[in-house]
Length: 136
Ligand SMILES: Nc1nc2c([nH]c(=O)n2[C@H]2C[C@H](O)[C@@H](COP(=O)(O)OP(=O)(O)OP(=O)(O)O)O2)c(=O)[nH]1
Image 1 (tube, rainbow, N blue to C red):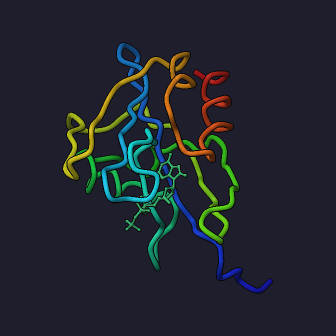
Image 2 (image 1 turned 180 degrees about the vertical axis):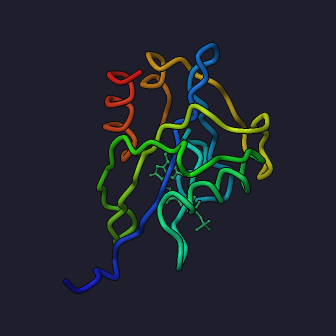
């Protein structure tokens, strides 16, 4: 099968804490979809697996260490994005080292799973949130 050059592969994590809920971050000003809340993560780079990409993103964005074996695949979304197709893979992570802090100047908040749907999130995230609510 030929690789579709218009696909954008993104991995994201629902970090789950029993007391605080799920961590979301606000997309910073100046970026596409600025101001919307999203799950931490980002694009998969060349040579990475989805899980190694996500562990790298979580380190870079939140300064936490995650073992790839603690990343549990949950669901995915496929959505048009600026003339391309976004394939967004969502993982749940319940175990990490360090306290998440924003290294990229984005606002963070913990939200209980049943309140996630009240947030303004990118269109691709709607089905992910539905799935998480049923799971958590
Ligand atoms: N991390 C994350 N990205 C999401 C979510 N939902 C969603 O549509 N996206 C989109 C936004 C971006 O277009 C893309 C993530 O790529 P990114 O954060 O690495 O890239 P970006 O567009 O912010 O900018 P850049 O780093 O490429 O300059 O996936 C989500 O819940 N989490």
